[in-house]
Length: 239
Image (cartoon, rainbow, N blue to C red; front, side, top):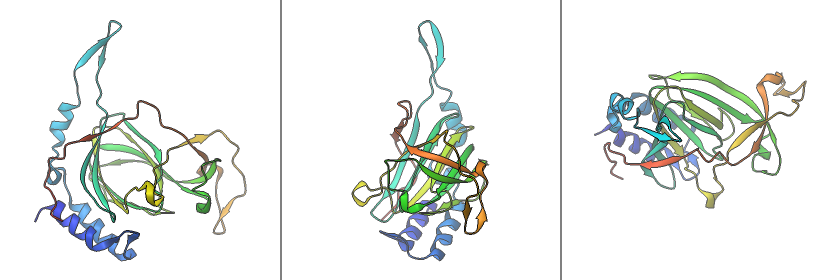
């Protein structure tokens, strides 16, 4: 049995259309993800590094290096979960975005990236797109493979996050349940506002420093943010 099939089977046993069957099952999924290597999903890091050098082309007499967009490799999706891989060329960015009502497990297969993640101070206001909302920084760090699988939850663990590729890298994601506009799980993007941060704020009786807080508002990502569908060449799963 392939690693991808084992991942599919454990996801099928662990997730319902509303999320994990229990907190304990997430560790089972995480254990499988921690073992997956680039070769298990048809990715060879060396080949991708060479492929991303790209051809040069001219604009107004200047030479430029073509940089391909972020590529998403679809492995599986159903109403309970999705499995896919984001392949990111160096310096590419996935802007700050949310995962409403979703649990997400992410495994960095190779390369290095910078990750930044927030949680809403008041999750009950998350659906209100008409105003900026206060969020708390929970992660601001570099990640390099091999590293442990990360988990974010509907209201904690960094439900809003962004990624910036420091090198060519690939991120294997399991979303439970997947995005679904019909079910209120629409992906929204956010940017930070230069707005005064309140002082003396406490969460669960603990003071929160102002540098850990940010006002975030909905926005449309820039036109140069492109995620294209790629061809997944790894082992297929048998439902």
